[in-house]
Length: 286
Image 1 (cartoon, one colour):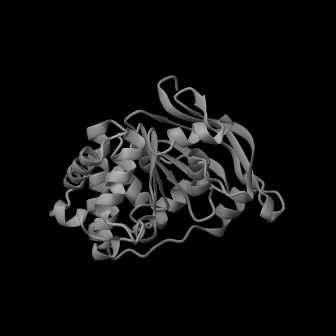
Image 2: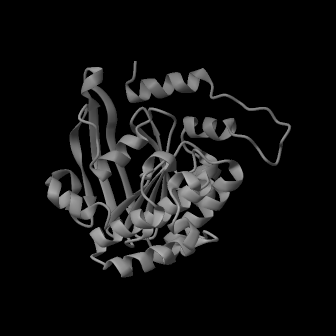
């Protein structure tokens, strides 16, 4: 795609800790500016490995063996650490999974937000504080002044996640990687957080790579979806097309395995073993 903000091409990686076991197998995906793409798969599918490769935080035990990650015409994999650090947190940012551990427990919320703005945007202390306060209002925290003066443990899980969304969008990045940002939240709060991420994304025109294991979340927030299994792309396309007309047997089985809100009494259908067997053979997993 010529207008892609992000192009992942032929990305392959192995785990040295597992004796060279492939964890990514020739992965291709693209993301346009202003698009929300879901990166979905079960545990171990490779979705978090792709996200970490984009962010430059792969563990030392995972080694890239081929491919490129092209962001605005620049290969992230070929960048030196200082150049990569300049991009991360300014042009590319992260909404992490667990707000409890992502925030510094010993520093007030306002200080943490303002420090990031001073570092990445060069704002004065006063301007950074004012911008941090506005950001908390933007993510619909009812009493932003109180939140600014609070420590993380004094806020609810939903409010802490709103703070992390504010931090991610604070510098108006071009790409946000959302790493399962609703996993630790109850269903009601989850819906609010999804709506908020979509709102901030639309206001700023940001591209979002949304990592999740939940096709229901994909249906709510994403424009397109990439489905993974065993480190390989199984299906890719617009969300409506993939969910209404899935091409792969694994995709069809996953959709059938999900709860049906229009048929609340219907039981869940597990993915048949023959689907997994054929899928492992297709990928080359023993």
